[in-house]
Structure formats: structure tokens, C-alpha cells
Length: 102
Image (cartoon, rainbow, N blue to C red; front, side):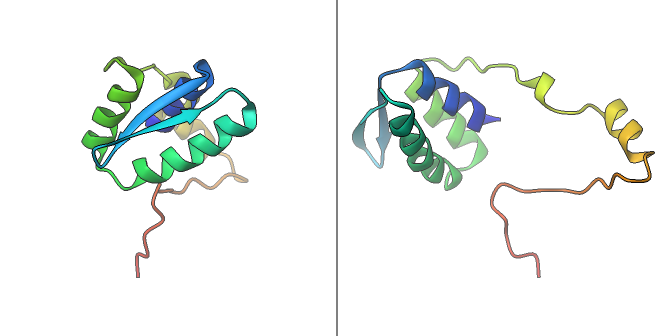
């Protein structure tokens, strides 16, 4: 869940440096508006990377390969089973890139 790690890192800082295509991009992230703009820019870049590459890239931004545990933000199989048994709930799938599956 790299997108949470990215947002948390942006929120922790007033300035952020990201290397893209060998170029160092410096971003001011002092205000919430700046943080949101930088997040949108960097998210677009991250969406174009493979899962492995996005974590390597994010490690460079963060200065560490350590990942935050966001497991409490997602359902486990037991909770999904309980939800699936409810008549008003439908469980489906979602992707990050929204590919055309036709």
C-alpha cells in the first residue's frame, strides 16, 4: 500500500526530493494544498512503475526501505466472509490502473 506510505511521507515533511528519470525534483510541501499537489504528481509517476520499482523509488524518497504496516486498514478473509453473508453487500474487485478488460 505504497500510496499510504507516500502520503504519510509527504505529510511529515516541509520539503521533499524525488528522483525521476535521473533528475532531482524538489517540492515544497509546507501547506496542505502543496502536499496534495505533490502527492498527485508523485502518484502519477508511481502508477507508471512496477510494484518492485515503486517500492525502491519510495525508499529513496523516504531514505529507508522500512514500510509502514497498514494491515488494520484492510479486511482479512474472516471479515470478508462475514460481509459476503449479508444480503445487501456485494464484494467485487478493484484495480489501481483501471485497465480496459474487454
